[in-house]
Amino acid sequence: MRATTLTDVGSVEVQERDRPVPADDELLVQVGACGVCMTDFHMYHGSFAVETPLVLGHESAGTVAEVGRDVTGYETGDRVAINPTVPCNACTYCKRGETHLCENNTSIGGAADSVIDGAFAEYVRVPQTNVEEIGDMPFERAALAEPLACCLHGVGQVDCDPGDSVAIIGAGPIGLLLLQSFRNVGAAPIVVSELDEARRELAAELGADVVVDPAEADDPVTAIQEAAGGPVDVGVEAIGLVPTIEQANAVTAKGSSTLIFGVPDQDATMEISPFDVFFDEVGYRGSYSLTTEDFERAVTLLEHERIKADSLITDQISLEDLPTAFERMENGDGLKHVVIPDSE
Image (cartoon, rainbow, N blue to C red; front, side, top):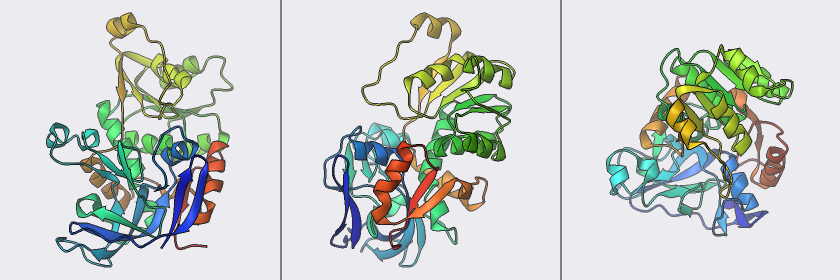
């Protein structure tokens, strides 16, 4: 089979590899589509270290091509979305449903202590517990189940209630999925701050009550708060930079939550005032990955079109085009790039 392999920092190549053989409790899935994520970008550039050679790609969907001897409930030809987070189901975190925090987590092509070959390939091995059937849903849309599940997990981290105000800093693919996820739980108003005009326009189309261009504001914090009618119940950072994390916290009301969703550099640091945390009761909440339940919910929302995912897909590319996608991501060009392994 053909697979795009990370061979070193900044280097990928399409290789011919043996087709994987599923274990007794696994499925072999022929990949129909795999989204390109900022995690892939960080691995490519070495800001998230992984052992090479490695096939990346963790936002995927496809067709079951082979089933392991002990697999029940699935057969060849089934169309599925793939949850890349493989928990041990035995540690304390798994037992209480926090599978994303598993002490022995393995990721299929994504970020974890242990990473195995992912889905920038024609075929990928997957435990039968890590797929959800998608019916006739297009593979390109189903591939967004993983990032959507991460967003649903983030919304759950801040206990957002109907009528709670939200400010989202950044309207990339994740920011736009977060926008729709917060709308689905009744958040209002939702203010989105974004530099790029096309992304601001799309945020408005997808339901942002107000969009703000931080470059045009004398003070982005004041502009966001004025747009929201005051400090917000939830301030969300969806970029991964210290200045925008500080900005999200600055727009957050007393007694409320700042959600750090964007992935900061591993060596990034920031200063906080312990007194302000104490006195204002503003809590920082992180959001890492997804649970098994989050993934199931994401597939359901996509299946019933409660999330407008298709408008986020900028282009469909081949396995050979992955470096070009990384270049475009670095330049902020486009939104979600999706690899179609069987395309040329």
